[in-house]
Length: 357
Ligand code: ATP
Image 1 (tube, rainbow, N blue to C red):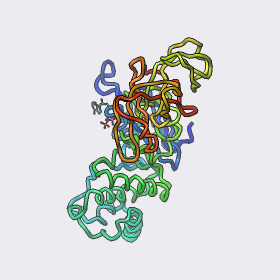
Image 2 (image 1 turned 90 degrees about the vertical axis):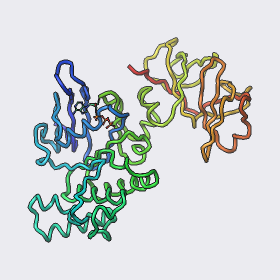
Image 3 (image 1 turned 180 degrees about the horizontal axis):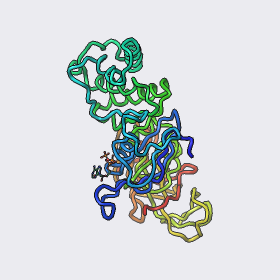
Image 4 (image 1 turned 180 degrees about the vertical axis):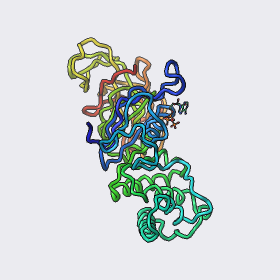
């Protein structure tokens, strides 16, 4: 028995006939700890929402079990689970005020009027909407409606709050503000948050841990820093942040030979034999430009792309491979389109990644 708040155990979900239907989840297992901000991250269609809906009880697994606080709830209906969901569409009742919307679920649970009023006040303060209690949803902005939807979901004090892309309808600035707010709410309430997004930056900003999903499987689970710094495979390296991929050959347990014959230190899984053809991932910010003669690799500047604080230099290497390097304003002056440059790598920058299956 797992002591996780939520444990998905060998979950497979097949839509349609079990034999030949669409396999939306393929033997997925994950333990979500109590009080953590846990994110399911992956591209559209990878199965995030399906997994969330199974924790909520809107969907039943074809195989596998959902355990909540040590109890098997696989076949329990949604209303019997100590779980609440915030959807992308806020789904507020238009004819009820903010306070009535937030109190609605508590009324349905038969709570006393006085208790409801106290809780409504408390959760509206938590989402910073206490001044708007008497307004109707049509009198609120999208961001304010989202806060009310959050307050409503938090009011019954669920042990787990599920959030299905709740910020995707907000503009960028508001979304960034709400990311910080959501994290604050999670810390203040101590409720386990399970958050679904396809936005890697959102996941990195808010999460204690992230599960990266692709095609119905979980590829890696870890803290944002671990996933960013040590992606388990090429998909994760590519999906989280930006990455360059170069072909290389294993020289020994700690280094690889690059396309031009130069050898560089690389982090790699144990047991790779010398001579094995591999792919190395390198983050653009871990590449330093230098004089051509001083470089481990050399190339021609194909493009310089400005984006505010820094630039991206797109370089074409001798063997035709391309590499993107992040260049700070200080070293920018040394580069010009069509010019030659050398590149070096920060310590630990080169990482051998598994190619995708
Ligand atoms: P998005 O970010 O686009 O919401 P997602 O990662 O949440 O994507 P899911 O909604 O879980 O993905 O869908 C996973 C797969 O299962 C998709 O191929 C989807 O078309 C399919 N699917 C989801 N729900 C059903 C259903 N009720 N019937 C049939 N197929 C479904």
